[in-house]
Structures are given as structure tokens and as C-alpha cells.
View 1: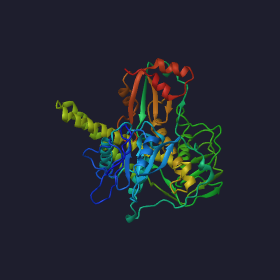
View 2: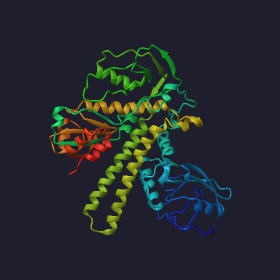
View 3: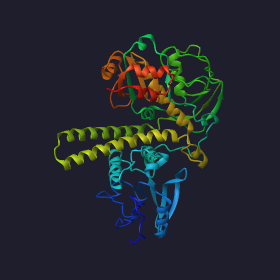
View 4: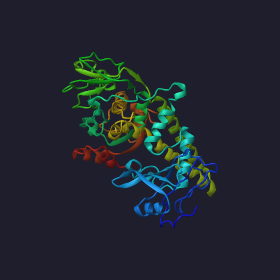
Length: 460
């Protein structure tokens, strides 16, 4: 194909027409390099190609001048990150600027060359069995639907889900975003602080959360029923947990409506004492662990990627051949990217269930109640795990937990309190350990940000 001269710069625009008998490749610009990896091998189907680096007006004008129809179908503050290009009546190809996909400029693909990107998405397909789609969100949806095959009677989305007013609130159920408490006398005298990260919290929630199907009904003065999926209106002003006094309340203070999972945990920590009866409830007629299959698929992919990375690192340590070492390094990078991509899928989709634009477009994927149910399940799961430990954290930031101790070794401390370190769901990773002084000084300054507390840890 003859095109006008491309403007200078790396990875200008790139497209590939897939599905033609000869697998014809159409190129925009001179810097699109696929290497030995085909888009078909990467599982892109017949509609998606990717481009990295900047897409600006000069490049768009050049593409249009070369005979392409270019439509911007996604932008962030006017900067395009998703395009549809077509020529001569051929089916359009979606071109995704991954550096800005969903408005994120620091994704796992940032700075990747197209050939490396294709290899990484080929690895994603190999680990998950699902092809990467036009975006993080569309891929997450494809993963979910792949576990509910229509030909086997898989449960489908409600076509026109009813969304009660209370669950449209964005912050109805949220994680422990920046919780901290006063240090006990023993903690104040501790010499070290240890930080841990709860592994794949939202993926664990996907595995266990029950979601509602069908049209919900408003019930006045209901009796609480843990077997029902719904949201319950309770007046919890002044109620304090009894079973875990050094942990935050498992519910979000100041709210009126709570998911079933939150109320179940509330009853556990209060032993059922002084808990008011619900004034009302929105209850769905059916419930399903609809995300469980997707959670298991993604968890298996996450573990396979981690195992592949460990194997490649072991090989790298024993290699003295440059070419073999390069291949091992490539495997490490691809495994890391796949692991990050898996995390983005479940984390992003958990929030996208409540995205306002889905409501505006009438999408069947607009399920803010699911978003809140997932958040609540993740928070409740973490609260249960922490309540079983022999020590309590003094600060929690979403999935980061901080402890004070006289034990200098973070792994030894974790073992002593029963905190499980590993890659499995429900486990933790040891993130940092250091002298307590700088952390306590940050606390004394009134700092509530767990990020600031983590920065204050002097890692040895």
C-alpha cells in the first residue's frame, strides 16, 4: 500500500486488517513493527489493533490525508486515546492508545513497543484463554461472559435492570480508605512498623460475593434474612462493635443503607446485641455467585503468571548466555504485565458496574448495587481475616495494613500473629518494615494517609 509520507516520530498510527484471506497487513507510518508475533496469535480477533505513543492532530491529519477515515471514539480532556479507522469500505479497526486507556497514563503497557505488546497480550490469552479486547472494560466483560456460555445455559445479564435510588450513591459501600486509630501503650513503645498488602482483595470478593438478579422490591420493616441479596436501611448511629474493639467498625459510619454482607458482619461483631431492626430493605428475588467463574479463571491466570515469572528468574540466575538471558527477561516482563493486566480487569470492572455513563447509555452492565456488594464483600473479608490475628493493625488503607511490634523481621512477625504471607487469595504480601519512629512522628502530625505512613517506613 502506498501512503503519504508519515510525520516523524515513533509509533505514529498503526492498524491491521484482520480476517482477510491473506491476513493482509495495512500500515500507517513507518514505525509499526510486529516482529514475529501476529495479531491473530495475540487473539485480537478481527477488530482490534493497538498503538502506543502520542496521537496528535498532525498524525490524525496525516492519516486522513492518506485516505483513512478516523473517528475519535474516546478521549480524556480532549486528548484521544481510542480511535476507529477505516478505508475503502472495509470493516473498521479500533485503535487503542493504551497509555491513556480509561484515562490512565501509567498502565502496565506504558512505553511498550507494539511488537512487545502483541507478545504480552498473546501471553495474556495463553494464561486466561480469553483474548484481550478493545479496552480493559470490554476485556473484563468478555472474561465474565466466557464463564457463562450461552450454549450451556449460562446465566445472562438482566436486560433492563431496575436500579433503586439508594444504590446509585457512589460511596454507599467503600473500603477502609484511610482508617487509623490511637496507638495503645504497648504499640507506642514498639520499635518497628511492618506493612502488608492484602492480596487481590476484590478478586477474592468476586469469588464469594452473591449478586442479585430480577427486579428488586422495597419491603417496609422487614426481618433481616442473611439468605437474601439486598440492601437494608438501618440506624447505626452510636453503635460500636464488640467483637473487635481495635479494628474499625465493619460498616461505613454515617450511612443508612447496607449490603447483606455488611449486616451479616455487623451481627457477628455485635453478637446481635442492640442492633436495630431494619426500617426497610430493597430485596432482589434471585441471587447468584455470578462472578465466581471469572474469579477462578483470573486467579489461575494470576498464579500461572507468577509461577512463570519465578521460573524465568530462576533460569536467569543460572544463565551466562546473553540471548538466553534476554529471552528469560522477556518472560519476566510479560508475566509481570499479565499479572498487572489481570489486576486491572477485576479492579476496574468492580467500579465500572457503577459508572454513570453506563446508566446514561442504558447498559445492562450498569449495576451499582453489584459495585457496592463487591466493595462490601471485600471489606468484610478483610475485617474477618484481621479479627482472627493475634495483633491488630493501627492503620488500614484499602488493602494496606500496618502493625507495630518489637520484632524486627516482618515475616517472623507475620508468622507470630497468624498472618498468612503468600500469593493466594486471602493471603498477604510483606511490603515493608522499618523503625517505628518516623511512622509515629507522621501519626503525631495528624497524618491520616496510609500512603504517607508507608513512605515514612525506612526499609532496611
